[in-house]
Amino acid sequence: MTFLSPSSTALNLDGSSLEDDAVLFSTRAFALDALLQFQSGKFDQCLTALQECLKRKAGDPKEGW
Image (cartoon, rainbow, N blue to C red):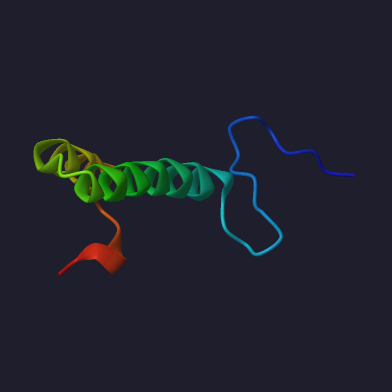
């Protein structure tokens, strides 16, 4: 029987890592916040939330536009 060390990356059933899920969760939270700020006319706060999304997604190959 093999045990994973705490430093190894745990995988979900779909093969993604738990770290990826954590980044996705926080990015989604900032994106939702940006949407709500935009809809309420708070455009400066919307931009701040979008900038946080970009920081969280830095280095993501899917975001290389």
